[in-house]
Image (cartoon, helix red, strand yellow):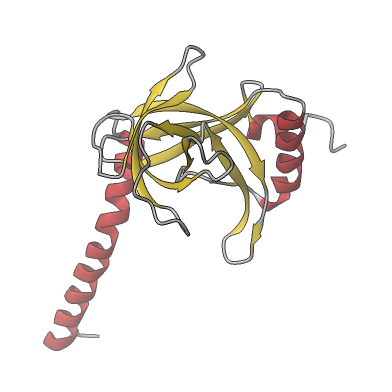
Length: 197
């Protein structure tokens, strides 16, 4: 069957549109997988575990540290927080610590956009609560209940639980791994050989 000129033009336009639609996701994948221009930060975590019917099962994480003491009050609305930037460093144990909090954008290694709220528990001090954007760790639904139990038991038993996060200079990030006792959670939940016999 011969293709007419109008159909050929439509076909080429469809191919170009399809190729253009792939450019952005492919660029992002290559950035995350190939670029070595990131800093790796370790955050201690606690959790609560919701179920989102649209997105599936995931562990909802609270990354620490989440508080910051400021010398002077920040001009935040009293009823809600706002977007801010933090510059991260490392403490003596190698975990992330906040070195700077600013309502103005900060760029560079270890800088990240966050949400910041006034901490109303101690009004005499200018303490602010920071919410990081990496608060969800998606996992296979079959492993989610076991993952939740493992992480809950670890945090209650004061055993080390952490996430490792890659942060690029432009503020993009990716959770590299969730670990309990230094072991990736997916390894801990992997069925042992012979267990299913």
